[in-house]
Every structure is written in structure tokens, then in C-alpha cells.
Length: 245
Image (cartoon, rainbow, N blue to C red):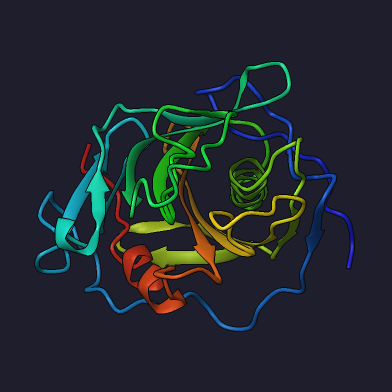
């Protein structure tokens, strides 16, 4: 088990390139096999892949994906609504747009003071898109996005969570050829009924013809009531596809 090397990130939303999880993240051995998916090949258009689900589109980062309907406690935010977490200097360290929240406001008594926008409002899961820079490789950025969001959303510098980031694996599905990475989060030093003991973060990274790299990220509480199962997360990931523009 080795310490993850700090790598340049690709996030033109923040202007920050450092891997914030580098000091706490450990690397796991690569998993065997490729990413699973149950969605039709090459889904496209603004209609949901799964009947009854809601579609979110990020033209800025060239991703489209679906989440369950409102009856399942999912809320799709405005495409340009930014969610972010700030560092010790008050500047954003991670930012995402084209977002959706699961069970938002479930723990309003425990807001995250480092959250900006709709982030840290007690939701059990958040999905969104990020990136836009050209630094580093696609594999590095897939790992950094997973690790950084796990770090920022589940404690940050004040309550550093333990992060284990797996090796980036090829992702070829729905018209996207890129990489995916997973971060396992153990929440530390944050006691309270609204703080999950664990969390998981999955990323999908793609490179556009202009050389810029963009990420799709889902981070989700684990070990808490109503937490998303891995199967539910995989089903959401299976809907991820590029925009036509």
C-alpha cells in the first residue's frame, strides 16, 4: 500500500491543481475486470435511458446522465448551479456543476461550514461534473477527482477523512472512452447522528478533442439509513453518456 503521489488536477472551475487527498489517500491494487453496466449501448439524447428517471445535462463538461425520479427523493439542480467546498483560505478546492442530490436536507442540523451552494446540506448523495484543464493524464485525473471529492465532502482539512483510492480502470460505455476510479472514505473525528461512518466516490473521466479533461463524479454516504447501494450507484453510472455538442 503506497501513498498517492500529489498530481496536478484538471479543474478550470477553481484554478487549483493540487490533489487535496494526497496526504491521506492510500492506493489499492487494481481490480480485475472492467466496469459493469446494464444500460443500452450508446444511449444519447436528452431523454432518460431508464423510464421514469430524470435527465441532467452538463454542456460545459459534455456529460449527460440520469437519476431516479422525484418520488425517489432525487432533485436535479439547475445546470449552472455550482456546488463546492472551500479550503482553509476560503477558496474553492473542488467545484461541480450539472448536479443532482439524493435526499437533500436529510440532516439539516449538521451543515458543513466549508460548503458553498447546495453542497453539504445533508444530502445522502450528490452527482455532478467538473474539470476542464489539460494537466496530468486522464488516469491521474480520474483518481484525483474521486479522492478530492471524498476528502472535501467528508471532512476536509478540519476533520481529515481516511481515503483509499483505487487504480484507474478503462471505461468504455455509452459513447465515452475514458477512465473510472473509486475512492473509499472512512469518516473520522466527526461524531454525530448526521455523519455517516463511511462513503464512496466514483469518477468517470473523458478527454475532449481539444485536449481538455472532464469528470463526472458521484459521492455517496454509506452505512447510513437509506444510503444508496452499490447496485443503485452502478445503475446511475450506466446512464452516463456524452452530449452531442
